[in-house]
Image (tube, rainbow, N blue to C red; front, side, top):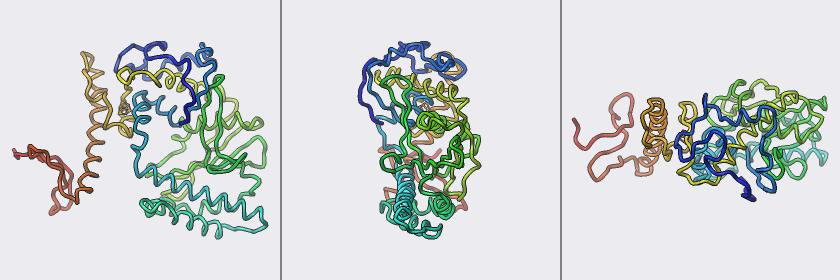
Length: 377
Ligand code: SF4
């Protein structure tokens, strides 16, 4: 995230509907109230952002829209994703370098078919960072040939943008919702089609999760990409987003985003900008948590989330939110402890009181991870 200025930001509790100092400033119906304000595609206070020079990337905005506390915790420890992020980066880099090589070779008069592209892709992924190279190769293995076929079937002139591309072919696209405030996101591969009104975007997903077309249609990431791409390519009326579940070896059916719905997409992004702006620079103690089962179970910051340890007051719905965050925190700490046991040569982690965490039951068909109290009941 590039942050080039901090002028004219609202503090916590100064935004509409916010409660100063509230740990759980959960909007009505679980949706940020700013959505109501931006339905017409027009913020009511555009002057709040005047004379700022701020660029925020899509992932920071997405975190803000999910949960302001997640946005702040991620920013303060950006490497929490660990190896998974590094593996994804290496897989993406291998594809980017292959596309660059393909364009250069084809511009130089060579003819590269899928076999040549595949060979180059394998070379690049094998040259990944040594600490994650086996996993990066594994992540690309199933889809490598299908990706190679897609690249080889595309005229280089139709490759408009890609992650790692130079100059006009840079994958970065941006949109300015307000003067001086820019939302930026990167396209993995953006290709022209036979129609000037239709654009194809491919996106590589290297994780173990399985995306569906419904996920794509609802995704904040692709809504933001559509907003930025429509801004850059004025003639385009329709964007086909095709997500590749790399580990499963195939792309999903494309999902369409339409210019006629641009106002709706922009309103969603503006709503996230509003949340980001409200909580970007205030005291951490004033940043609200918005726990839900869906968000907390995949939150990278669950181990450090304060929502699990707050004074929950008298409302049972707040107890439930606290429990959701506490469960997510317990799962995150368990995963971290598994890593600590591995780093400890497989030996359990033991407190001075004798309580332990380790892998027990090797003699049984299924080994289990658990906490063993110092004195077994
Ligand atoms: S665990 Fe839940 S409440 Fe806590 S930061 Fe993550 S998403 Fe927000």
